[in-house]
Image (cartoon, rainbow, N blue to C red; front, side):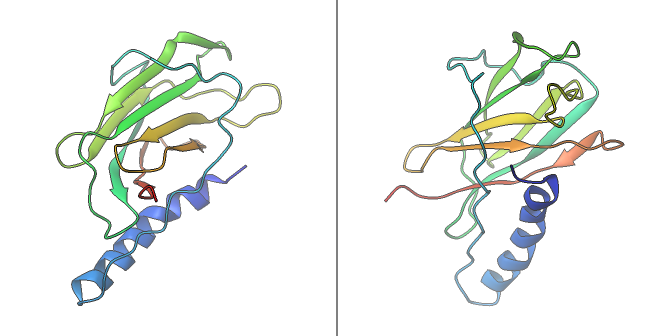
Length: 154
């Protein structure tokens, strides 16, 4: 299990490495760490940007090579509802916009069965490896910027 700190450091790393790219070196963004897909993943979640309110997750989907944004990247989200159970109402699919950005709003997922609060994400894009990861919200945060960095397919 990855910590929220590890996932949050990606944005800082992007800023530092992107600045190296501006200095003439090829920018390289560290890929977002993979995390457990979990047993509750279901494909074909509805396309929507909200499954609740009170917690906003937003950022940019980027390539690990060059840190460039990935327009149209597909991001799937699933989390437990306020009752601590997975259901169809708390699943969503988003497509990153032409700048690679996304914005997703949900309830703050409660912990359950010994698991900390978390939101599952599955990111895919043509020409890139699919990534399954998790984001671990922490109170009192209600809005988090999380860039998602995926690697090109070989």
